[in-house]
Image (tube, rainbow, N blue to C red; front, side, top):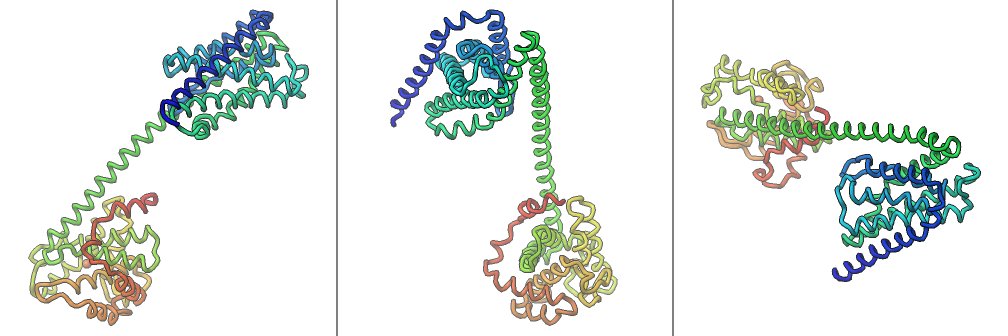
Length: 455
Ligand SMILES: [Fe+2]
C-alpha cells in the first residue's frame, strides 16, 4: 500500500466511524427525549467531569472513570441514553484532556467511537437477555460482563485501528502496547457502574452520590499515589546518576594508584597489570566465581602498592639488599593491604594482598601461613607474580625463558607454591596464545560490573 493510499484509507476509516457515531446519536434522540431529564443531565454531567479529571499514569497516559457512568446509564436507561451520556465525555476528551485540544478529526472520531462502543455494548446486553433496568442483578451478570467486554473491545479496537493506520504500524501491536493492560481496569469500572445502577434503583440520585464518593476518593488517592511514585522514580534516577559518578571517580582512583606503583618502581613498570592478567587466567581456569575472579584481578593490580612506602634507593637498588633493607622490603605486603583496606570498595581484597608472599610450606611472610590457611586468591597471586617476575628483565639478569620459568614453578610446587595452583597456571598459560600486549586493557569497570551487587 502506498503512503497516499494508506492516508486515504485512514481518512475514510475516520470518516465512517464519525458518521456512524453521529447517525447513532441522531437515531437515538427520540428515545432519549423520553428519559427523565434530571437523571440524564446528572449522568451526562458526571461522565463529562470524570473525563475532565482523569487519573494520570506514567508514560503520559491517563485513565478516566467515565466508563463507570456510561455503564450505569446503559443498565438504567438503555443504549440510546448511554450513547448520549457519552457525548460530554467525548467532548471533554476533545477539548480539555490532559493532552490539550485534539485536532478536529480526532475529536470527531472519538465521538463516533464512543457512540459505536455504547451501541454495540447495548446490543450485546439485550441479546443476552439483559433488561433495562435489570430486574435481577445476579442473573443479568453474564450479560453485563459481556457488554462491558464488548464496550472495551470496541472502544480500544477502533482507536488502535486508527493509530495503526495513521502510523503504519500493526494494529495488534498498537492494541497490545496501549490497551491490553486496561482490560482489568475496565472490568473494575463496570463493577462500579453496576453498583451505581443498583444504588440509583435503591435510593435514586442520592444513592448514586453515595456510591460516587468512593470513586472520587479513589481518584484522589490514586493521583496521590502516582505523584508519590513519580517522585520515587525521580529520586531513583538521581541516585543512579550519583552512583555512576561515584563509580567513575572510584575507577579513576584505581587508575591513579596503579600509575603510582608503576612510577615508583622503574624495573617493574607494567608488572601489576601483567600479573593481574595471569592471575585472572588462572582463577578462571580453577573455576572461581565471577566475584572471586574480580577479587584476584583487583588484588593483583594492587599487590605491590605497599612499595610506595619503600624508599626509592632501596626499590631501585641494582645490588643485593642488606638485611635491614630486606626488612623494609618485606613490609610492602602488609603496608599494601592496610592501604587498600582504607578504600571501602576494595577492602575485601586486602587479605589477598597481605598474603601474596606467604609460602605453601609456611616459610613465607608476613604471617607464616601454610597450605589452605593462605587465601586461594593469594596463592594464585603468588604464582602469577613469580612467573611474571622471572619473565621480566632485571638490572642484574635477562628475562628467563617461558619453559624455564614454568619448570621453576613446578620445582617449587609444594614448598613455595600450591601444587594445585601451579598446575592450573600451567594449564591456563599454555592455552592462552593471544599476544599479551593485546590482552591488558584495564577491565576493572567490566569486572566491577559483574561483582558490584555484592560490594
Ligand atoms: Fe610483592
